[in-house]
Image (cartoon, rainbow, N blue to C red; front, side):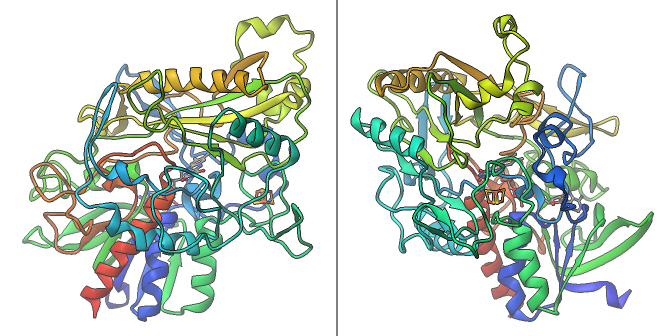
Length: 522
Ligand SMILES: Cc1cc2nc3c(=O)[nH]c(=O)nc-3n(C[C@H](O)[C@H](O)[C@H](O)COP(=O)(O)OP(=O)(O)OC[C@H]3O[C@@H](n4cnc5c(N)ncnc54)[C@H](O)[C@@H]3O)c2cc1C
Ligand code: SF4
């Protein structure tokens, strides 16, 4: 048993777990990373929209159940690097006001228990770790930053530059979308030695060239190459955590690997399975001492689940859109409201260009059926694709839990008004900027089938942090209130999600939590 004891065990190798381990690796402490998945295979399928979006070959085959008893497939990806293997790498900071209470049309987004100042240094470090390309000063809502972006913004192709110009002409403030990418450009073209070649498969696809700054490429691979004190076990599913007789220390990590059970232990245990899977692990770890689930004295574990109200809109424009790498522009002008709307609306960003196979797999509106042979390639060439994201609000009944050994995910939509109005605003600004779309079509495949339930990409909030153990699961260091050696380092801790993509905040927080753990290990 002795060799199975580590200083730190990290469960999950996504951006949260991998960033935390990367930060702790130079301490020389013995660190074990347990990852249920394997390395995502590099193959031509990585860039097949049929395989990725229509067949969902990389998505976990794991039916979950909704409140009506129907089954659906959550958009989960179990690989070294976690969901970042397929993410779109838009890495933005929460706005400073997101850390305070925000009043929405649909209710209140609660204040975080710490301010932006606490996170700022870690955001800067997270941007360095994940190779973020961006341009300070363009986004009017960007919070203050102690350093410039580590890399130049990813340049716009002509059609997107034209769109940015026209948006500016009507008073909007489009900005270069901050992206985590291993791209070197000269005159808008990738240099001969650039890892990324600026192709059209950026968003939702795994990168065949390892050009995306995902957690495997920027954390796990370099860490394992440099630090012999770090070990990664793949195919290692953590079934449950056990505690000592006091109930205050995790002393057994039960792992299923290669068909048998192994037990590990550690001075510090960090759970970073993704917000839904982390809550499920702690719920599975219920015992006589923790009957409602480990660290669940508050009854809040698994509750307050958030995931953004999201929409991918394909605007069919008259001109051919020959953009290859489209995901370079965003605007936040309606983030906290608009002239005709007193409440926050959200963020608009471009996403990857639509591929014909992808469109073919979508549940397209009936009226498109009159088109002869459904010319998906024509639609694809005339589309400009936008990702709209509005804040959803924490609600105790939005929760993940086990019932009769099946995973249930209950979801009541909160604050839907914001997304509805944001869609109207997008159409309005496209019209005013001279890009009047012939149609705006919802694309659902990118977000995962069975939207909104299956759209778990931006999962957060299932073990929120706070100062009061009666209303929160984690303390301000993301240590479980009720356990002395158990931390969570994914988006579980979010008390509110804002309307920016969550991963830079997950990474920043993981670095922050790692610093707290490093102090303890000294
Ligand atoms: C299609 C798509 C596009 C996205 N685009 C963006 C974007 O542009 N910008 C952005 O900010 N975010 C984006 N996201 C979200 C982003 O991927 C997640 O926020 C991020 O990956 C979360 O990191 P994490 O470490 O918390 O969890 P995950 O990435 O989910 O990693 C958790 C890891 O834990 C492992 N695990 C789970 N359970 C166990 C267990 N019991 N035992 C052992 N291991 C376990 C999993 O296999 C996984 O590797 C996107 C997500 C998707 C799916
Ligand atoms: S755009 Fe770059 S990072 Fe994205 S899939 Fe293509 S080569 Fe990979």
